View 1 (cartoon, rainbow, N blue to C red):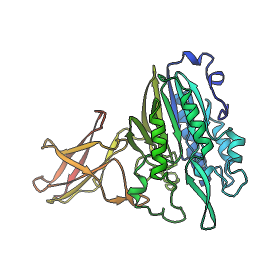
View 2 (view 1 turned 135 degrees about the vertical axis):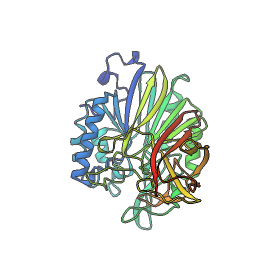
View 3 (view 1 turned 90 degrees about the vertical axis):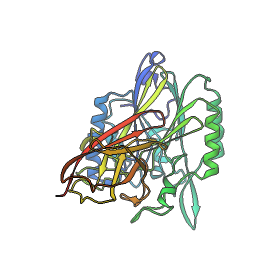
Length: 387
């Protein structure tokens, strides 16, 4: 097992002829939160075995491993199970707020907190967006890059050949509607308000990245899937490995957007970059979305609520639905609040259907979602009208 966060090129560890590699996969994981104890270790171990079976070239962890409090050794023991090189990015839960070197454990375990490397004709950049600041007498994390890292990032980007595609990784999202949808409120219980890049800092980074051949920015932190394209760059917040902090115990675990917990596979084929969400282990599903509220018979009504969660639909997707072979009816973005953190969630669509003409018994409901890139997702489910 190689810990290669400090390396600038993985060719020596991963493949002797890495310069000739053009087709490869990466496993992108984030927000494991190993501090949740035995259930976290057990379920994460099973996900590691699953990823090993897919044989990606390397694993890229986008943070909130929870090296603190006192969880670093447990996490490092877990990732020894990976059979491929491992890269890491610090999350806000990997920073010691009151240490003279807040990244001491991260640096000792993985090397620099921000770095870059080349593999298979692609340039990879890990950005550290965590800055320790004092607010109201307490240290906390502010989402920003200090001037030294900004200067480094500018120089690093400038040195990349214009035709080389670039993938960036950062823990706290640069682009996301998360805080707006959440209403700026705190998590329930002891969870603090999540740090987020403010508009001016996000704009500075977006403008810098847009000057270069950046194709994809991978983000963690939000425990949900959200995909937004800005200035030709796709910013992808990806589902957490831990779902909602392993709250479901041994059972089926979901993120804050009700997406089954999992990770993302990045596919590089001759310089072309794509990616896909993968649900994991006990939370594995075959579908690309699901309807809610259909488990019990519905009472026919003029306005029956229908909600469809298209797990990885990018922002800007459109949806429609129909019952049996009836007409297609447009669905609207679902704006009500729900889920573990009681907020509006992305990639959910809703309509109010007139079901009064349906006879009692079984019926078929179908959703048709069109992504901005033309991808079509069609999923169906049976439901029953009460007699």
